[in-house]
Image (cartoon, rainbow, N blue to C red; front, side, top):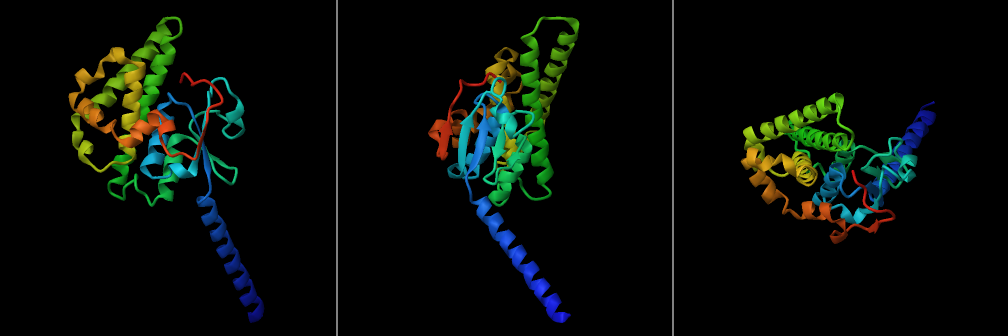
Length: 243
């Protein structure tokens, strides 16, 4: 009986060891990122990859999620970014992908407790800002009516409130770069490109000054133009998406 138990234990240990080896091999494999060049969430992940020095482990596929159904095989919502792992499984959306990538590099962009929640809170603010800008831009393309006007007004209120929160509590600007900084910077870059008429820099001078400096980081430049990075390959089968 003891011999049988010992054999079972050895077998279990071997299985665990084999699984660990397989997982380690998988972590070292090539990943594929589906992205759209205008998407602030795609840019956040591109910047994350560069900051974590993972570009040589990622192949890029530029896609228009509005017109191309290729992505839906991996992500039922057909949204970018989507990260295809080398085992065939996919991760989405950007907060999930960012957390996965951070684990590959020893948690370099998500700081330990107690700073964890501040970084993730700022990531949520950056993502919320980007979502509000997207929604405002898309809704303003349609015919004006009372309902759409109310939606646009609500998104503009969210944009203003988020900018005010970031402006009036600026201590985070001096903290070591984390995921929250990347999310905010990519959202502000998108705000600049999609809604310049809001003239947000006049209202938020501290935030504007921080953004002016932060956007000069190599990760931000490469996120805006991945061709200058060190990604394994870049596949551009379609025109740029107008997200």
